[in-house]
Amino acid sequence: MTITEPGNDARVIAIDGPSGTGKSSVARKVACRLGAGYLDTGAMYRALTLAVLSDGLDPADAEKVAARAEGLVIDITTDPENHKVFADGRDVTMAIRSAEVSAAVSAVSAVSAVRRRLVHVQRQLAGGATIVVEGRDIGTVVFPAAALKIYLTATPSARATRRAEQVGISEPGEIAALADSLRRRDDFDSTRAVSPLRPASDAVVLDSTDMSEEDVVEAVLAAATSRNVGASW
Ligand code: DC
Image (cartoon, rainbow, N blue to C red; front, side):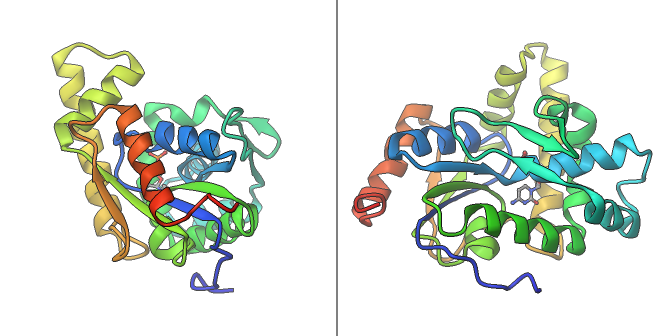
């Protein structure tokens, strides 16, 4: 198996972009409106990162991280109204959102053996289904022939403000620290050797800086309609 193994893309809407652009909420809402499934691929990299940290492994040790990925069973729901993630049978839906996991996930997700394994699972979970798939490399690598590809962006300060609201932070120092951690993660994700974060050449690029979440959902649905995506599903 190689990372270029073709996916079954015909019914996939790919939503990629950096952290804090509102991808998850938008993807979930679009899936609900279209009666489609929803897959959060970042949650899978986070589940592995949690397992790596819980086992006391160094997230930068690619060999150990790859070995841990081999032994880990990740189950993730594809129901947009009931998002749950399990690692080796344990519900880790909340635990994977910790600051420790966020700080280590970029290193874990840069390991090529990890990506090969998780991309394979993502294609199995989503292939053939009517589904909105959210991540960093969905339109470029996982489903390169997706029916619709959206690349969601926003300015760094808009993304940090949004993320701060989500996690309930209002103190300026804490917001600055959060902005810094988002920037480091995005730099790492965009410059890594394997499947870096970048828009697919045929993606619809949406800058959500001055848009409400509902506006973004409507813009994605309009892009879907204009390409006949979803109409006959
Ligand atoms: O979407 P998120 O913030 O939960 O993603 C966590 C990390 O996982 C992110 O820093 C990059 C990585 N990721 C990835 O490399 N490829 C994906 N398809 C999804 C996420």
